[in-house]
Length: 423
Ligand code: AMP
Ligand code: GLY
Image (cartoon, rainbow, N blue to C red; front, top):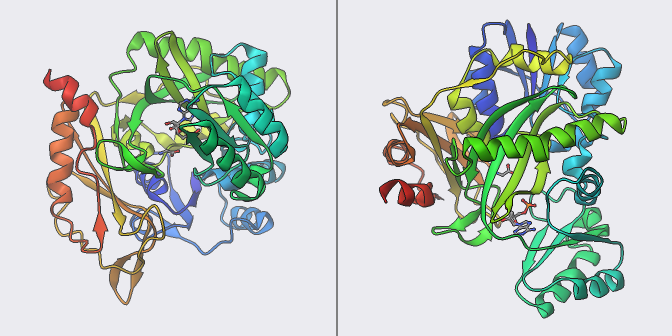
């Protein structure tokens, strides 16, 4: 089949790499792509916010499947535009993508379907929100309702900080995303991610991972899009995975279908493993970045065929197999990230891939024949091993071969699991 992949980050390089390996892929296009994706696919200049142009491209190039990587085009209804034009798309409709696009929507759904998650209040004004704080205790969890590029969550240590953050939010700190704010109960435990693929009815578990969201070693400092990840996440035991499927994922898919907004695509559940069991922190309607890169490293099979089955509602009886090894990725960032990253810094990969590692490109571009940084997260250096300790050693061996003078990375990705493995 002919495939068009939408996106330009490390996640999409991971997807492009696996789609290019799929036996059922004939021709792979990517828009807008990046230099790493360009090694796997024909990169095309296409304004992905112009749905008519995307549909026209699909018709002209006999595209059989569009894979939509990032959340913004999903929330913007690209999958709907493709469906109306008769082009199968991997990714949910705009209405279903509200699971990521509106925190309040998801919380209400959880309440209706009795899905375990923290208590919450949806607020629409500063006075309403300030009043609602009295129902909670510190630390306060405040979330801009809409998409805020992963930055719309504030955990305030005390009432004063919470009030100040609410004032900022209703003052437009997160733009329209903050016109509504969800205040929720603080959940205690360890975080882990669970992925599932669904065609709106059938659910196929698609692996587990743990990310490292904070910029500093030991999980301190500002939140980022993710500084490194590994898969599988041993904390999500078989038993816990079954609970997540039964108590969280399947009821969500069933409710979405029953309510007339069937969800198809990948459902990425951010979980807190609390003393009373897994609770939903948030849903994403896309693969995690960089979690996707470690899932793709382990996935064995024809990704293109699986995604098409999903898009066509034919997931029943399909399987998803993963290599038993652990994959671990280290995100190399440009100095300044997660603030304003330095652009244009030279990046040389050397022989980083020599020992079976894979370097996925996130924010890179070519300038006068030289690979340079073009974003906050620049590379995802990924390797496998028998467990997290070994995968970590292999990944950092590859990182050491990359020459990126204006970049930095965390050197402790996997630390919690490494400590458990060593004990
Ligand atoms: P989110 O963007 O919803 O994933 O939130 C960003 C981060 O905030 C999460 O990865 C958690 O570390 C933290 N967080 C969000 N919601 C809660 C909660 N209810 N309790 C504790 N921590 C939370
Ligand atoms: N790495 C976290 C995310 O993709 O949301």
